[in-house]
Amino acid sequence: MPKTIVSTDRAPAAIGPYSQAIRVADMVFCSGQVALDPQTGDMVPGGVEAQTRQVLANLGEVLAAAGATWNDVVRTTIYLVDLGDFALVNRIYGEAVGANPPARATVQVAALPKGAAVEIDAIAHLGASK
Image (cartoon, rainbow, N blue to C red; front, side, top):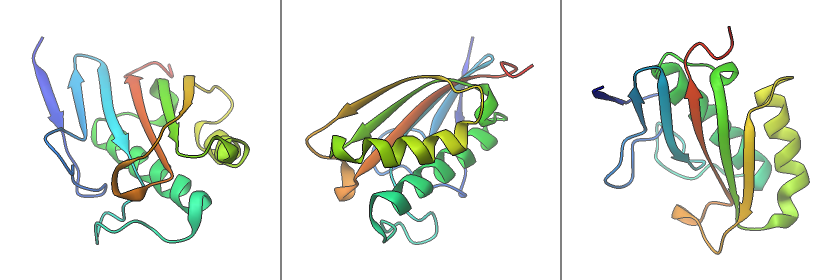
């Protein structure tokens, strides 16, 4: 099955040699998103809460460009620089994914690109919400 590169200007452009997402058949593999403003390319101000909201918005735009929604997401990984932010990020994440959340892992990392506090990637299965 051929792979299709998914790209949207409604989310930040890739900051390296990778695609925002790849679609293969009915699967969408989204690269990690950090809290860059899609228009400026700058990190959003406001700490981990504002960053988490921007990350989820960016990822939502990439999913939409692939024809998916959060209801189609089957797996995510959350990367945190400070695991002490877990409860706050978890609450905001829960608002985005709704009543039927995907499988997930959350890990603490030493650092993230552009000094980000949080990064999230996702895998979606188109039609999973049906």
